[in-house]
Image (tube, rainbow, N blue to C red; front, side, top):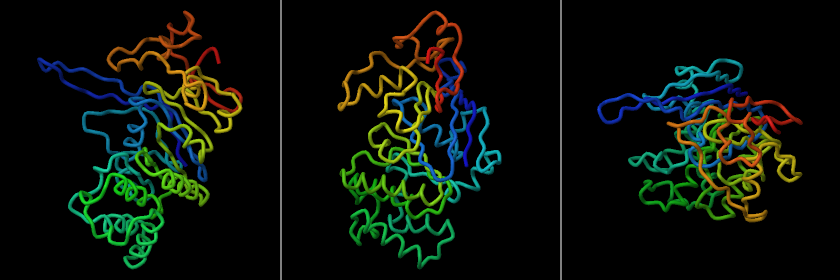
Length: 307
């Protein structure tokens, strides 16, 4: 359904003195999503997760340029095609509640999403009512504006937009923070149901444990690159290939709870070699000479010469 190869994104900015500079915020992302599967994208803040979603929807800011290959259902995903498909064939559950229209009642907003996908107005109203009930949103919630909702209620409204859409590809960008655990389970269950109905789902999250509940595969991003793509069961069986993925897994409270020292490299000062080299316990001189390519090992993909 979706194939992304060697995606790179550069922002052009101007500093004091109107000197132009280029920030390479994404340097080499690759990912594919099949119909009927959930692919979770994990990684720390600034690794490129949300930028990937914005690229697929064609909503990058005007000072951004990207290179690479984007294919959706076998055809190039150009800017014009993004504009035609978003909200219909490709839908986003956004991270921020600020995406809700402050001047429109939330029930009408969810109904509009359903109607964009060919649902009649009467059926859209019924579907919205059923969805709000499923997420424990009172009937009068539909008549409220976003500012009249709590943060948790607003986030449940955003999740509702994914349920009513008929899109082939659903991108859920951090859909669960701030929600009650029962609502989190319900939201994740709905995303799984969308995949089982034949759609492709990208779940962008910081919560690896939540992702493992529904994901078929996990893609790990670091400093704008894909460092590993692994089957979900690889996390429980200890078959993780990249040292960064292993460090993420060890940092969870249920595991060793060991933090990873250091930070991702600054986009203005990216090293020539492996972007993880200054934090890696496996580093050798070869790692700092050239940036490793993404390669297939044991039914997974990894960007490390020592894996």
